[in-house]
Length: 135
Image 1 (cartoon, rainbow, N blue to C red):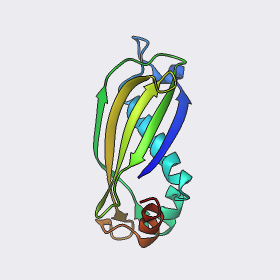
Image 2 (tube, rainbow, N blue to C red):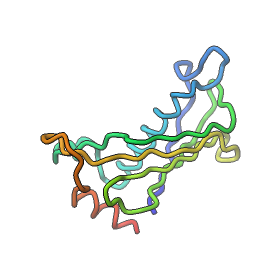
Image 3 (cartoon, helix red, strand yellow):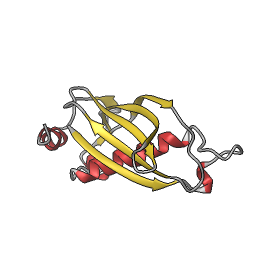
């Protein structure tokens, strides 16, 4: 399993008129966490693109459990539980107050897309090798 925790502060741009984090911002927090998770295992998105692959989101789910407010610190725990065959899945748990209060959970699934052909393909070997090293 691959696991990484990304921390961020809630800024004014993240909240709605009710003073809580706007629901779609969680998807951006997910993106930040998965990017840093991949960076943590030396797998940079820009390098995948240089190799000719995109990782588009094909499925997303987020369950909201508690509100988060301006200037709260949140920790997004991002995990990869399995070696990808045709899709790569990231699971997320969002906490505030140093992982004492779970505020959201969810996942994203990503296809592997050949940039030139604009078609789904199997995961690149370089990505598979990096991920396999953690299992």
